[in-house]
Amino acid sequence: MRSERSKITRRTIESVETTGQEYYIWDTEIPGFGLRVTPLGAISYIYKYRLGRGRKADTRRMTVGRPPMTPDIARAEALELHYRVAKGENPSEEEQSKRLDKTLKEIHPIYESQYSNVYLKPSTVKNQEYLWEFVLDYFGNKRINSITKLDIEKFMLAHKDTPYQANRLFALVSKVFSMCEQWEFKPQHSNPCRGVRKFKEHARERYLSKEEIERLFTVLDKEDELRSTSIYLTNLFRLLLLTGCRLGEIRDLKWEWVNLERRRLELPDSKTGGKYVTLNSQAIAILENMPRIADCEYVIASERNPGKPVTEAQKAWQRIRIKAGLDKVRIHDLRHTHASIAISYLGMSLPMIGGILGHKRAETTNRYAHLADEPLKQASEMIGDVIKGKLPQKPQAPEPLLPEPEPAVIVTIEPPRYKAEVIYGRFKSAN
Image (cartoon, rainbow, N blue to C red; front, top):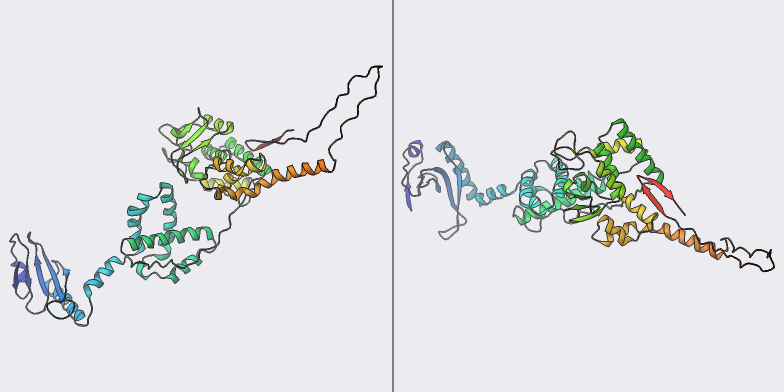
């Protein structure tokens, strides 16, 4: 490889020739300082040094800069590197470490393109976008290798008032650092989330009573009458209660997934994968009468953003919830209420509830196990009544009125049977 020696000045830069081959011009004053000329004539200032003493020591080469940087500025940069090497430093490795030590803001697009958009469901990606706002707001431009376990603990404490969300944030940050280790942006086993305790979560069990369901449907009907809330939003809340679906499953429902002939929703994807949702007559009636917007594939269509599903469900729910007097009731509690009705009023089994709600694991359905106590209590009470003799006695045979008495008719009174029927929240009891 061609190599020359000359003091690097402006004149040296101007005299560089394009030869079609790579060559170097080394400075005569600062050891290791030189010019690299590519086959196409591109010029860069470089600094070359050895790691240790002797000719057998490994060498490193760094790019100091490129024109229009002047030779004097490049010479000063090279001289500083020369002093650092003399002190035993390895500036090339330190520079590479700085390039790899990215901020979380720089990691964010890498995480999305290389991981979340490839391996996660679109609904999960959407939820993580919301969580990323909190992460970036807290850590700002802090570099990933400077974030310590103490920083993570302080981050968790900053969200202690919302323990469920704090744990979701923790899970995201921990995954990000794990991926940074895989991408070699961080040393192995350096995740600062290791050993940080998450908050205890207490599952919220809020179910609407018969009276609360009545009030909710009364408010929804009034909202439709006054047109103060979009009919798509009011029907969204009705369908959530009548189907037991998750918010995203109905909010993002497309007409092509509605099979009224087979009385079901055919969801290609959900939190637990693709599933069928059986529709009752009340849900079918809502879907049959739902106005369709031209060129919109969504059932719960947005009237503000043509062709898109609604986005203001939470705001509308807070307004309707307050009007109905439903204290601390979340949209997701409508799904819990659907399950509680099936168990408490209709005595359905937990496996049946798991099938209705689309649970993959029995452990998920077991959170409703305590609701099955009500039918058991009713059955136990009826047994107690029989034991104590509280049920009506069999009637005595009537006195004979004719010489030849007719056979007596013995009437057996069976314990009453109970059933509950929910139609738009209207409960009916029948014997």
